[in-house]
Image (tube, rainbow, N blue to C red; front, side, top):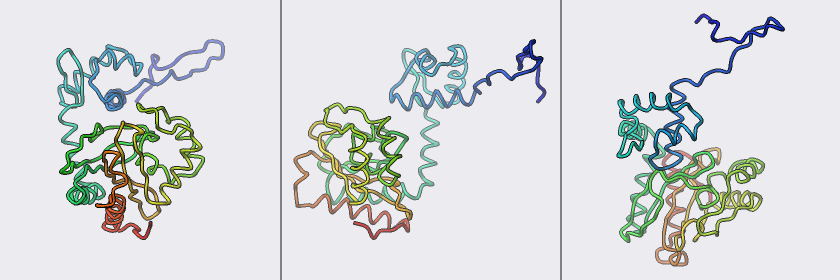
Length: 273
């Protein structure tokens, strides 16, 4: 593609041509919009999006109209924008190709049936834990974290496990920039304490938290590790904190067994604690 005069700045003093700052492409802007809505976890106006991502409002209007037309965005009452139905179809197709999710979903169902509790499969999304899949048990204990919920790593049992295999310096760096106070004020925020706790939890094959993100809610999580020992995901049981000490059924043993079965079915190492 030939270069035009509008693409360059001319410096008369030196007679040199220097390229201007590159423009953000349309597809990059579209991704910024989608990423923004996912991060916020709620509908937003075009003005809010443009302001927060630092883009010209006129550009955002044009891209939003195109995304709405293609059902990648959904325009709600009051001009609020949210992720569109076409993305859901893409997500379903992608999910069907994931061996881990397919295997774990079946195991979640079996664990929910045997424990009668709510089961979640969680993964890492940058500095957050995200709920990948969920199945409610017969006890119908209500939890606020649904599929797609993103939570700071330091608030959850799964969050610590998901970074436990990383080098210590990397764990400390992650918690230094991402650890924040939880709504209950009980979540640990010290990067050094968290880095040590993450490694210890992965080594033990178990992480438990109670009341750190939600009052009276506990989570018992076990890591799902690949052949290199990296925690690819977690499977967890979410219960009222009063059930942590129960022995019948033994929820800790059940969730650890489920994690080992998933690893075994995927051909990953299962000879761990």
